[in-house]
Length: 172
Image 1 (cartoon, rainbow, N blue to C red):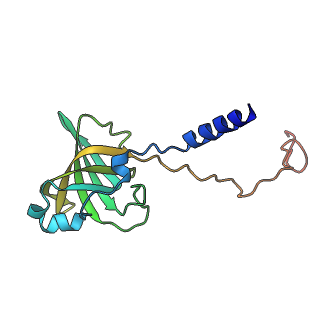
Image 2 (image 1 turned 90 degrees about the vertical axis):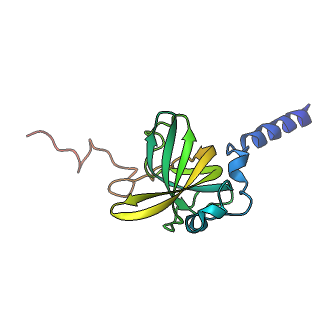
Image 3 (image 1 turned 30 degrees about the horizontal axis):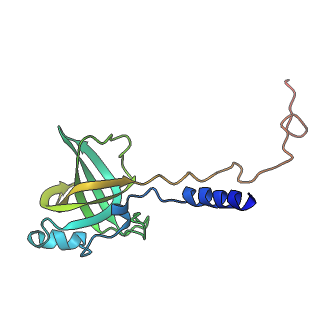
């Protein structure tokens, strides 16, 4: 009986470690196509499957789809974008349906998998920029990291009591 309980507990603990990242996001796309390659020679990479990720710059909803503008980043082992300041370039993602812009907002990390549709010329300020366009079949929004704990005055005093001397000041 004890052995069965131990096996059950191990199964429960291992089941809790299961990844919630979709398989399409965890596995790299064939060919390892880079954003710069598509910008330079879009005709060679049309309909190629890619897995790219980065930080969201903007989300724009149209009548039947949502367009995300993303600053590309290197991807980690599970497909999560790195948080370094190295940009691979910008790209656009077309997602069928509605994505709420308050959830898919600026500076959130996202990884997409889809096919290259082509390139589009738009401007960033006054600079003309060529955006590769990806039609996404899988989109994964990563959770934001928790905010760091800050304490004022940057330490914790276990003996602080606001009702004792020297903190307590009676009303004049």
